[in-house]
Amino acid sequence: MAGLTLRDVRKSYGSTQVMHGVDLDIEDGEFVVFVGPSGCGKSTLLRMIAGLEEISDGTVAIGDRVVNAVAAAKRGVAMVFQTYALYPHMTVYKNMAFGLKQAKTDPAEIDRRVKAAAEILQINDYLERSPRNLSGGQRQRVAIGRAIVRDPEVFLFDEPLSNLDAALRVQTRLEIARLHQRLKTTMIYVTHDQVEAMTLADKIVVLRDGRIEQVGSPIELYERPANAFVAQFIGSPKMNFFSDSDLTEGAAAYLGRTINAEEEVGLRPEHLVPVTDGTAVIEGRLELVENLGEYALVHLVSQSGVEFIAKTEKPPAATKGDTVAFTIKPELVHVFDRASGLRK
Ligand code: ADP
Image (cartoon, rainbow, N blue to C red; front, side, top):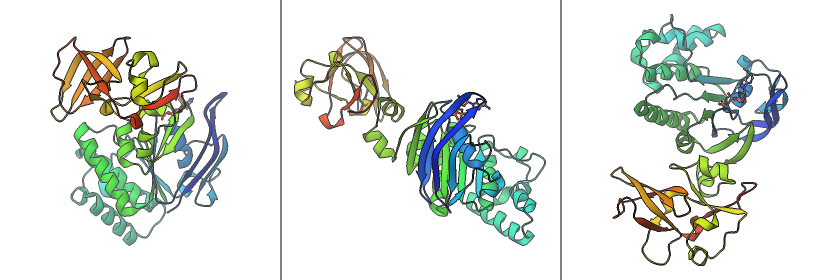
């Protein structure tokens, strides 16, 4: 087991720089998720830690050891890929044993480790099957098993659930969470899915355009996003953004502060509460209601033309075209500087 230290890590492909100086500390045993939109650099960063991409500048240390010049196989990391990367002509057992065999591990020890990993992942019954005859979820478990048998200091997961259908994604996500509880090994996990990030991570690293936007626990990122980008990325449906002129005339009095022209206000859909009294902060014309039973997503357009969503317990007693007013607890209002995007 080991923590990691990244200092001013940069990556260039030719003259194009794609990582612009990443500083990050990962504690021993932590589950860290790199999240961000496609192209933000999360896979590149993971692959630099794995030793699959050269580090153009800066240092990556695993434990106390700077690994920039250490070969992937010698870094003490094991990676699980989105595409599983299993050998199609080998049985499950041989796939899991392969790395250890290459490392000339004692056959009895290989057998012990493969069986122990198969037990954890409940794939004992498939050990003699070929990967071809497994479902996607079973193949991904074999890929995870292959990582476990290596007893790595750090597990690296590169979008491991992307090729699974929705139900299996949820199930496998839980299995990975349980695996971390059980093994307590440092895990770094890449995803573009903020729900995976929120549910799995001790610590989320939000990336954009090769830079870290914010590092924090899921709840810190949800409650105190450092900027408008993180605010919009974390939470579903996305946070609504408004200018002062979109809000009701009474908003400033109710919220206890004015919003100036250089600021924008972020209101999460689940924090908007329908009201008919004088505490309304935002009003909108009802466009559409998605009633999901346990809650409703109410789609509205403000008088100023801004589309927004309210997530309410029950559908509003209103029909298309009606005006619906909402309030919000003042402490749940997020204010950002319009130009820099930074939280105020
Ligand atoms: P993510 O995993 O967040 O989707 P990547 O780490 O794959 O993003 O890519 C980060 C950036 O690096 C992107 O702009 C991508 O186009 C660029 N990139 C990745 N691999 C290469 C490569 N081999 N050559 C040139 N540019 C690359």
